[in-house]
Length: 266
Image (cartoon, rainbow, N blue to C red; front, side, top):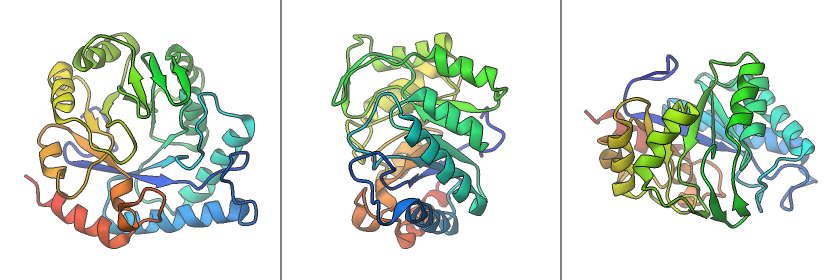
């Protein structure tokens, strides 16, 4: 494992979904920023009590998503993460959907250990043609003197279809070689839907231990054993929510039951 802040295997990174932020259509102006901070802190406390290894802040509620963050949303997310991290006892990361430069900026400013985003590739997506510029956030990381900030490359975008005809394992291997990925993440087609098992195995075999590989979506108590037999770890959001609904708050009992299974894995 290339990260000194995480264990070697069976890593569980949990999502701390921030509510819709100022400027987005679903923003709760009556609750305001105080509600956003209080809700995410409540989720963090339950996630940590359940024993997750790390937490990642994400703005999943800012639908429809932007490919380029607005100044007000960057400011809001930075403020929320800064306030909420005071209760953290585990490492944390950030992900501004779907802007890798904004994600690195927020991560650098808040002291995050890692950032997740779509850094490479070209996709046809719900947001239009999606073609990130990996060099820009990578150089920002260097210019901000945050070489320790790990970049987690989501290699197959949710809500999108890759226009790259190379098979997914080759795309992952290429991202490590050409774009300096610190980890590779494999996703299902939509938030909460499982990663294709063949894709996950193909990526793990192609990368061949050069960097960690994580299942990024759809991990649950029933499939986590199979996933951990292939991947270094997983990122869990939807399964930890009440009734397994992405938009609900975290259910502490679901977290504990899941972590009991993970902790029993070899």
